Image 1 (cartoon, rainbow, N blue to C red):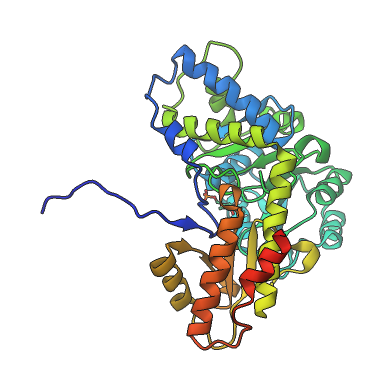
Image 2: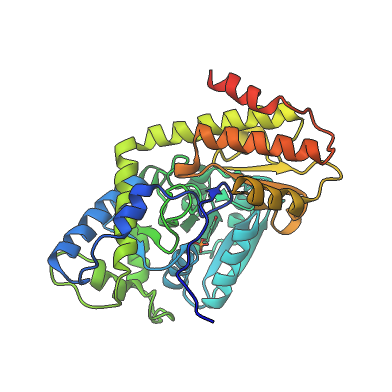
Amino acid sequence: MKISSFHPPQRTLMGPGPSDVNPRILEAMSRPTIGHLDPEFVRMMDEMKELLQYAFQTKNKMTMPISAPGSAGMECCFVNLVEPGDKVIVCQNGVFGGRMKENVVRSGGIVIHVDDEWGQAVNPTKLEDALKANPDAKLVAFVHAETSTGVVSDAKLLVELAHRYNCLTIVDTVTSLGGIPVLVDEWGIDAIYSGSQKCLSCTPGLSPVSFNKAAVDKISQRKHPVQSWFLDLNLVMGYWGEGAKRAYHHTAPINALYALHEALVILQEEGLETAWERHQKNHQALRNGIEAMGLKFIAKENERLPQLNTVTIPEGVDDATVRNKLLQDYNLEIGAGLGALAGKAWRIGLMGHASNKTNVLLFLGALDSILTGAGANINSGVAVQAALDYYA
Ligand SMILES: *Cc1c(COP(=O)(O)O)cnc(C)c1O
């Protein structure tokens, strides 16, 4: 059998990521591949650092994209900052906090658990209790925007608490960056990672990271070498560091970096504040439609992420059937519930380029007609108008 070129269908991506990619970014990706030590490429890398500093709202010199997806950004923070025997407090309120714990264990650290129910924000009182009970803890790690539940935690307060007890912080902002405020310097976050394919609306496969001076100092004082060669920041910085004399570390994913550069240029053109407002506004319109239909959100009102909406599936409705219909009839992808929420909730992303009025109306109209057709107990025919009323 002769295999021919792969032509994916054109979808609308309203799940937990990847999100719709702006056509400008895909165009940027198709520009000529040049050498990764070419002076023109090096110039682009310098601009990239500046653009990332803007996105993260930081002056940290050690700010760059890791050449691998968000999970590698996570691993990079843990393998560099955790030394064998270090106590690390991990606050878990969903799937991704669980992965943080795995990373601590594999780095030789000791996990102190602070667990909250899925669907709730990280509880600062529980964190403070753990800090008091473990005066020798070195680090606190948590997820700012839990993509598995659609919940935001108070990053500023959690970082402040960690610092009061002399701990450094590792914060997951894979889903928050570009969608809601992430203020690295103002909040004092020590190590942070994100991803390219959520609210930055870039293609998947890159993970922006940033480390402040306290984090860099802890890394430079390590007694044991970082166990991962690829993610050892001392080596990565030889490539991403200052000036013209860059050493070969790995071949950068050249065209993928063009894409991230373009995504960050787009973010800069729109402005962070405007991007945050847009995410909020489209979330509000979606919410009006969802609630008019009679469906409910999982997260409490003041803990909801505008870019990731977890909505309960109505009684008697089959999760997979609805998602398959959305995909087949509307070319529209939403996410299934994860872990404890599997079969019980849908995850509706309004991330980056996908956070727009057309998508909100398309989704509400599609869901309304599918649920009505399935005989579900909802208020039919009102969702789209409720969203339109909000926009008006
Ligand atoms: C998507 C996601 C990740 C993992 O990113 P990948 O690019 O899929 O590796 C980590 N943390 C959170 C909160 C995420 O939403």
